[in-house]
Image (tube, rainbow, N blue to C red; front, top):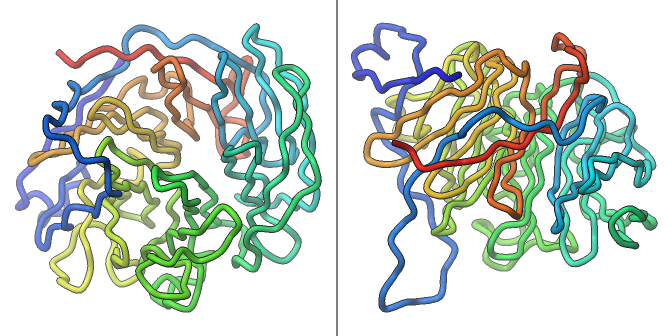
Length: 371
């Protein structure tokens, strides 16, 4: 089951239409790609894809899950926001507790949020007593017996609040760690270069400032964000981000290093040349975006309030198609699994959804070329 969002003329935007729109006015420049090895005969881009068939349930009875990290061999690590637990999905469908993250203090939208895995370390973004922070822990053992070592602080002092905590962390193709940070209900902080709030941050795996960040000595990679919760890189190394709007427009942004995306001065597409416009926008009732994934020329965006999966096809005329509207309720995360399938994490037990039998679930979706 799906719903397609087509592009409308800019005049409809000026008339206040609430249908998804592509950028207008001052268009966002193409994001700066991460350098890739040169090739005399570059491969053509793969054809875009879409979900095929009904999703398969991989895990059920999860409690407010927030982030999923697929593992080689068919398993996964899953964070639960309010229990502060990291759980392991085994290839046979068994779910076990890996460990609890010390210092997590759930409240509102805060708690144990994003996870990322690299070089034997499990990274976690979470809400503590006084702040949001990123830690890493050694991940020991093998499938079915993983355990967590003592946490090591990577970044502390990120402003927390009941809402707008951001929380997604991922390693980019450049090996650096990226984190999405909300404005923590301090709107003006998003425009303050000295604040970490309302930003996308870029850091080394140890939490240091990379030498090639846009501003020397600063972790800030882009600013002017309200509450971004999804990031993904395309095949050329371009960074994309999904962001919650306030009352009008949710956004998909092509991220340029040092770029300013306008919040709280503007929301969605504007004619203000001081800010970069989103590549695409949705009415907040259709999206409220969280996780973002990229595979085969296609971006997949999880929608919470919109209760669907959006497939987005960037290009000269970016288009977006909604799949499974209302079928699984709120969708928190979307990730690409090692076998090329797409995994979705529902989020109906977080206090804002309507739980169904077996909620919350991890779902597996087969992908097939469009057409």
